Image (tube, rainbow, N blue to C red; front, side):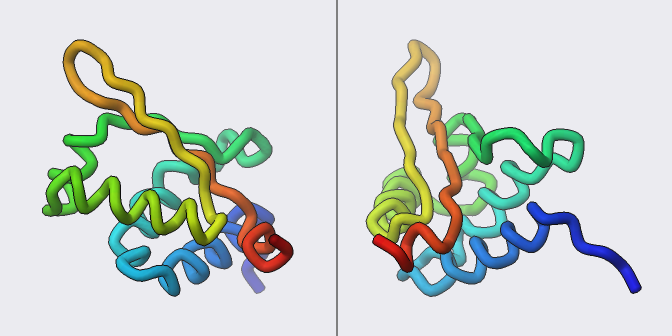
Length: 104
């Protein structure tokens, strides 16, 4: 039987919870893929990436990407900040354990 790493199980639970948020499925896979690095399983589940490039990769406008981030944050599945650099805005996202939404 194949053994599942703790973060992989956590990531599946997180993605499942995120998909229940309106349009959450749009970002769930991307955010889990970005946050999952098997070499860094025990580090914080925080990623930073360019907003426009991520939106373009998903085929949506940045305003839609931004809106879904806000909904996921309201569901207490993540925290995020946006910083504007001279070239392009970058988003920093921290995935929160799905149980945080249930206990809040």
